[in-house]
Image 1 (cartoon, rainbow over the protein chains, first blue to last red):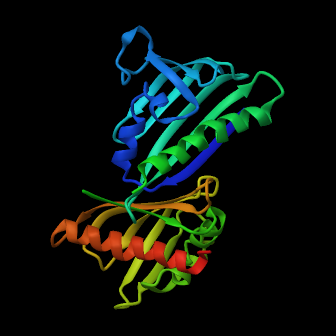
Image 2 (image 1 turned 180 degrees about the horizontal axis):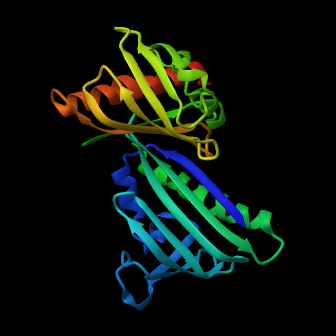
Image 3 (image 1 turned 90 degrees about the vertical axis):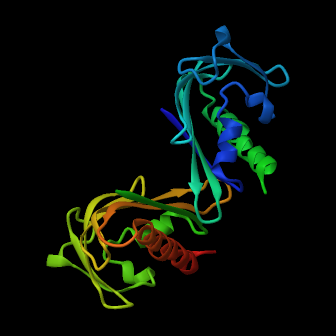
Length: 146
Length: 146
């Protein structure tokens, strides 16, 4: 089992950050690594079980992920990969936002667990931890900062 | 029942913060409001169920609190109040310390749920949140902050 844990402080109130990331279909709107996304079957993007079908920008392939859990009270969602170019299986990830009451900021924690299907664990961890989760927190910080 | 939640970023590693806070008998080492502390019966301070007996600096008011849980891997502890000069009953509280992987520091959370036995509940809740929890975070940051 490979585990990833990435956390960051975002200098914006939690409701503002949550409004940006809550929509399971809008990652290409704010995450530079991804382009084009739709929810399969035209389902609402907050319907549990819906599948987002999106592309890695620059011809990196298509990823399909299923929404497993969405909680407005915990500012959190959890999802799994159905198909992707990554050498992983059993991939489950979760993004949770926490309020920082002193200073009215937000902490984001993004975790993933999966099994490798080839030997490139270092490259895969880098692509997920830095190239996806870390970059997400960087652009959210840059775009939402007061 | 009222709930208090306060959180802050402490500018020191989570391991360093946890080492200080984990000692259930260590409040006088870091919290400015606390004068003396001892564990009843000479038990180890990390023995779940032990009771810390400590006094407030301001009025020598006595508190007794019992350790309900302690976990090093999640840097979490919970406790309840047995005796306190504060107008509270059914008081249970917890702390958690989480590393910030991007940029360093520690996401520090402190919460409590309780009933207020006299006076306006929100006044007691804010007093505990600001003068106990946030004051505690500020003192740790001053002690350990880079």
